[in-house]
Image 1 (spheres, rainbow, N blue to C red):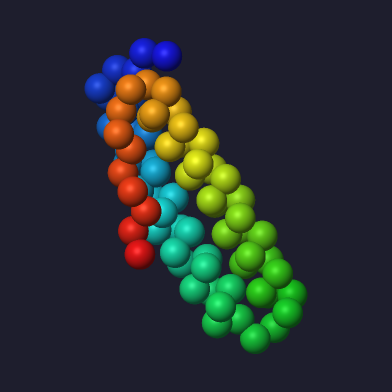
Image 2 (cartoon, rainbow, N blue to C red):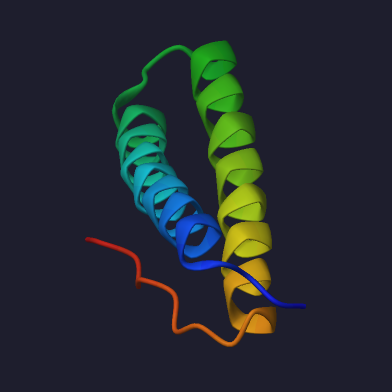
Length: 71
């Protein structure tokens, strides 16, 4: 799949934003005391990880080296 520079930039920016969300939801899940909130945060965390993996895969298929997760 051929990606334009503009598409690459958009996907990279979105992937960086996903990494930020992943870190936040992981932290929220760790800090949550209420079991229902913990479950919700973990669910959203998993969805964000899946979405980040999809974006990463699209960039790799386009021949680009995607950004790495931030800790």
